[in-house]
Length: 153
Picture (cartoon, helix red, strand yellow):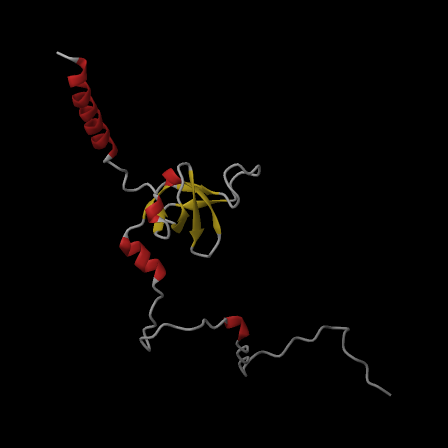
């Protein structure tokens, strides 16, 4: 058997092995095509870094499980994400997974008011309302002995 006849068969076998091993992918891992999509924290607590995991102060906060984030830039170790409050930072790529559609719709769609069927445009702060008047049957204050004014001349 000649060596030159075995080379094409060997190359074909090698390509087949590479193609089958590369065709499987992790559906939960962030990829470049998934940027701009919603992800959720999949671990009990994920460390969140404002400037990157190399910052000397450690994580800026810990995100609880099922916290919804938007993927900005996926990466092998840490992905850049945007929190729902607009804050951007970095989370370990292994700590997030694609968010289920029902979680995304529950968080991104505003609640509908029951009375009018419309979405409320603003929330009224109760501190801005005038205080309620005191009842008329409030007891008279008790005078303090010795603190009464003397009659003026």
